[in-house]
Length: 125
Length: 86
Image (tube, rainbow over all chains, first blue to last red; front, side, top):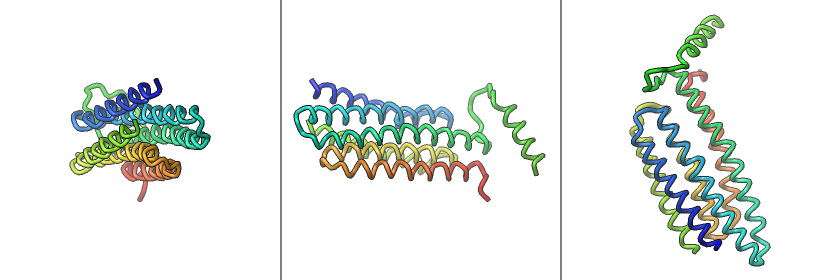
C-alpha cells in the first residue's frame, strides 16, 4: 500500500517538473516563464518531499527508530524551501519589472505604478 | 522500490542540464536568474532523493544549507538586476 502511494507521488513530481522545464523553454515572455518555474518549486518539490516522508514513515512503522530523525530533517527542508522559494521568485519578478523588462500582454495594469515610482525617485535625487 | 528514487534522481539531473540551456541563451538577465532559481530547487530535490538512496541523513542537512545560501544569492542578484547596487 505504501509502495503504491510513494510511486504515485514520485510520478506526479516527475511529471510536474518535466512540464515546468518544458514551459521554461516554450513560453514567450519572462512573466509567463515564472508560471512554469512555479510548477517545479511547488508541485515538483512538495510531492517528492511527500514521497520521501511517506517512505521513511513506512520504514519507521516497521520498527526502525532511526528514520524518525530522517523524517524530521526532510520536514525542515520542506519548510525552508517553501519559504525561500516563494520569496526569491517574488524578488526576481519585482526586480525584472522595475528594470524595464516589459511584459508581452497588452494591458499592463502596473504601468502607472511604475511611473509614479520613477517620479518619486527623481524627486528624492 | 529503492531503485525508483535513483531513476528519478537521474531524470532530475537531466532537467538541470536542460535549465542550463536556458541560462546559455536567455534573452535577458532576469531569464537567466529564473533558470538558476529552478536549478537551485532541482539540486535540493536531487539531494533529498539521493539521501534516501544512500540512506544518509547528512545529505538533507547539506540540502537545507544549500537552499538558504542560494536564497541569499538570488536576493543579491535580484538587487543587481534592479540597479540598486552601484
